[in-house]
Length: 206
Image (cartoon, rainbow, N blue to C red; front, side, top):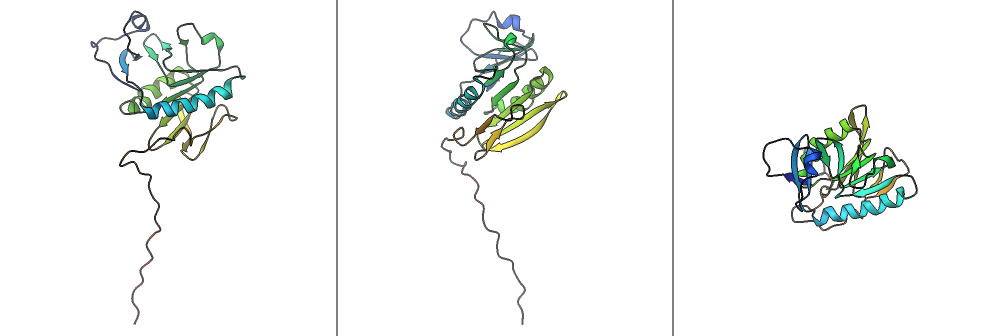
């Protein structure tokens, strides 16, 4: 999640990024900078539950799970910090960052970041070659699993709170989502209730 940074209107690069010594978290997309916002409790609940499941699955499979903050350098003008990422090429893992596209990226959309996750980052990840992309929406609780086909993503499947997510790239990776979305709802977020349709009306007979 992030908000547009209050910086001058110039294009920034990975070389610039490495000179910044403040305590804030930043992303650069197409040379434009965004300041990362503090995560919400819902974001943390989802992130921690998915982390446990993904770490357990990939532990002995030659892939590594990382979580934000971890810089992923996709180009000189594209440096992002996905919420979760899986890297299956050890050569990409540098001491300070990940070099090149992860195999799997998970973004937990929240507030203003939702549009960026579905537009800027989606297009960036597709261009960069991220094979599988999950967009997690806390409420209404869904996970959209997108699979890269050529240079565009196609929807593999959309999973809800009561579903078990199945990865498109790793079919043995199955994640029950009930615990990830186990947080209290706020007023106005009550789940929809299905009602019986009204009884049919018949014309009166003489």
